[in-house]
Amino acid sequence: MLLSVIVPCYNEEENIRYFYDELNKNANFFKEKALDIEIIYVDDGSKDGTVREIKALNETDNRVKLVSFSRNFGKEAAIYAGFEKSKGDYAVVMDADLQDPPALLPEMFEYIEQGYDSVATRRVNRKGEPPIRSFLARKFYKIMNKISKTDIVDGARDYRLMTRQVVNAILSMGEYNRFSKGIYGWVGYKTKWLEFENVERAKGETKWSFWGLFLYSIEGIIAFSTAPLAIASFLGVLFCVLAFVLIIFILIRSIFWEDPTSGWQSLVCIISLISGVQLLCLGILGQYLSKTYLEVKNRPKYLVKEEL
Ligand code: UDP
Ligand code: MG
Image (cartoon, rainbow, N blue to C red; front, side, top):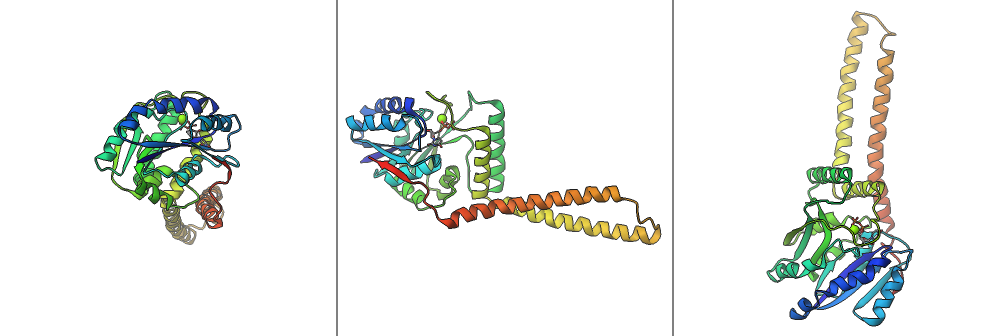
């Protein structure tokens, strides 16, 4: 049996070897289960010595594989590339910064043996994260689960062990705008959730800026829900009704009271409000259209510069 360990890396030179050493602390477990492993480092266009570090490992250990992108394509693309390259009967995705503790692997594997198709992890707290970020993240998951049919779990990490069947299911979802948390939920299969305390990243810094996370959350909503479109239509109907009521009101008022020039201030307010709502709805529509545009162009999700 072969286990593919997929590690997306972006500027992680300090973590590459560290991760390798930590993973190998499970060596006895792998031996006991007669599991061969392959470690697929996917270099997501790093600008530091990440590739050099991976190559150095590859020279001493041929279980270490490398896929190096021509530029930064994002973690989602890196995970997809890792899945495509993986040959294992099982595959697991792990962050290079050791925020996904390798020590959890034996327990995860136990559940696979018990017949689960996939073992997912979620962190129960967000220790070491700015409070505003945690707050907004929690709100995001709440809203997301209300408006999407796909189950998206709060605190879920990409750290997941799965069987070949699940990997193939994920690979069959060839969309360009990838939102893993939604994709995992969408494919289904019998999933066991394990919980662990948040671990702070080993070295280096997180790649997520506040703005980056915000855009990512919008991407998630657009990819797995059409609720914003429904909201736009609802607003349209609401304002039509409102306008109709106003027309009747004004008609009656001018017939019985004759005061044609009064109320221009409120008119200005109404016009600004409604044009605002119109632009908002157009914006929502535009978001979906732009995603559709990217999908139909059918561009490759990533370009490989080098492979080992
Ligand atoms: N990562 C990547 N491409 C990117 C950003 C991040 O492959 O564009 C990798 C990164 O090297 C790390 C993992 O994704 O292994 C998680 O990134 P990070 O630790 O920055 O995110 P966080 O843990 O803060 O959510
Ligand atoms: Mg991290």
